[in-house]
Length: 224
Image (cartoon, rainbow, N blue to C red; front, side, top):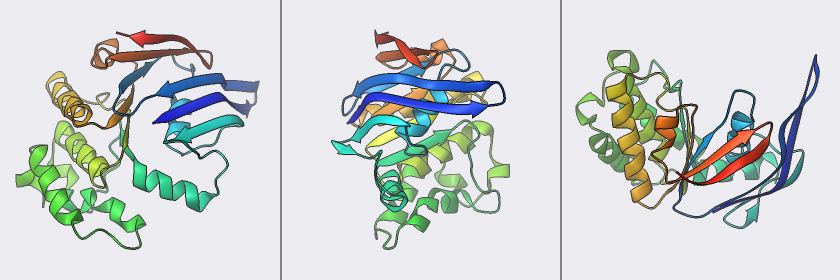
């Protein structure tokens, strides 16, 4: 599903050059559930941004389902991101003026020809995450856990092959966090590839495979 070959990414700062990713080699198979951990500054966010086609490596190759995306132009990269990747962020990113259903349908705005099944699928997803009775509410009328469940439904709308979750439980109480992790487990059992970035080792333990970064390199890659 995913392959990184000698991927490097550096940033210039006032204090000098930061090597966020320093020659990362990584293979994640279709249907795997992987948790990425590491201390602050280890390269977790840089790795997630490259996996999500939100950033490009300075050198190396990044392949999704065998296609090297590092050298594609912006339009082709956006197309892959919209068709193949779903995102769940710690800060939710739901639009406050839209209803829950309208937020779940947001990915359709980036498609010239939205699939006819999309709205029915959105309602099915809201039912699946326990929000069918909240579809016409706005985000400020929901709890944090409910908002994150809506964000997961939005991420799954177009049936992406890859789900990327960045600290998805970071702003939630323990009960809501458990509910969200349960949903992510269901996504994995449904056959989708999941990469979860977290600083919480209890959250990471939900994934069968763990990757730990330090100083832009992988220092551990194996089963939990």
